Amino acid sequence: MNPCVIGIRTVPILNGIVALAFLKLNKNTRIPLLLSAPLISLISLSALLWLRENALEKINPNVEKFGILGISIMAEDIRDKPTLSPQDIHGLNFIRVPGTYIYRRHYRAGLRSHIMEVLDPRDVARENKGVVIEGMKYFPRAKPLKMLRLFRTKFHSLQQAHEELGRVKIIEAYLAPEHLALSNEFLVDYQRNGTYEILLCGLQEYVEGEILDPWQNLDEDHLVFLWSRLGRVGDDFSRLEITPWIEMVRSRIRAFIEKTKKMIQEVRFIPDLAGVGNLLITPSGNLKIVDINNISSVYFDSEIRIDDRGYPVCDKSVEALFRIEQQLLGEKKPGEDSLFGMFFEPDRMERVRAIEETFHTSMAPV
Ligand SMILES: Nc1ncnc2c1ncn2[C@@H]1O[C@H](COP(=O)(O)OP(=O)(O)OP(=O)(O)O)[C@@H](O)[C@H]1O
Ligand SMILES: [Mg+2]
Image (cartoon, rainbow, N blue to C red; front, side, top):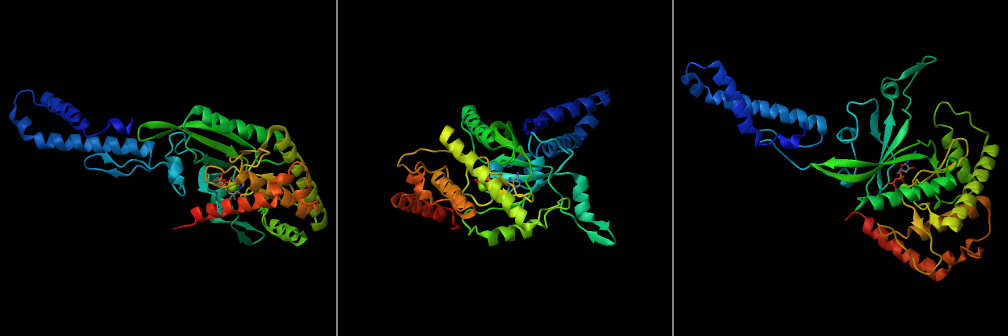
């Protein structure tokens, strides 16, 4: 039952029903009925509250309630919340409750989406209770079956949402499955306070790996560092020795860069390569992009475009691409590239730096 219809107006209806029931029981005399008026009110009010609490609980456990008058505070839009709890997920109208899976906020986060791990309850039980292997007790971290992405952007029309989906499909065509974490993207009618809005979600492949941060010093030592950290990832990983692993990383990065450049040249789109955490190096030595929702158009002109948050994402992504290429593959200086050279002209880079600074200032806590 929709809790919106169980409001204060329900009281007289319930009163009527309870009063009729009393009338039927007390056909012969009216005195007991009059005496029992407070009782009727009490019964109907309790029934109202019970119905309402139950319906609210079922539909959205997050709606805050003031029991006695049945007034509810408006449920906050999950897209505006800084973080989401498992209860927030269970409160969504398109998530089955109790359902088969456990949802947990991923330990890494971005700005544009809520990233939730979708976990098998048996894995979570192993993580909490531990397992004994050869006399030692371990608490293996539950590995997500999928990542549930809830996009924060509020779409003004279905067409706008479809455009976003279309861009994801394009980068998927160039980079998946080797270099892109595949995601089943879907649009839902997100119900909140009796209205419906378009929400973009994705059930994405979970990528185990270490962040390749394009802004760090990407020398050989850094790769050795990543390799040593990846040795601790997972329990089913038979990893390569350091030298073949580094060779593997370089060849996978070369493939990624070639495909990305091809995509830019053919369709003029670039994914966000600048955000830290968007690129992951996997234990097997592959490079995958996981952030698939901030795709920008590439224009070979002098204008510097910014994204919805004021970040010069296209210029910075091109810069990141060439930084990775130059540092890890020892390719020529980006400014020498005939097509992309314009992105590295000193004057343009200076303007990009200024925009970036404004962006960082606007993001800093006040
Ligand atoms: N499928 C995935 N597998 C493993 N890690 C993921 C996956 N999706 C996201 N992550 C991690 O979660 C963090 C946030 O992801 P992402 O960058 O996609 O978020 P976002 O909010 O959409 O992006 P933005 O960086 O634009 O704010 C990143 O550090 C990323 O490494
Ligand atoms: Mg990101």
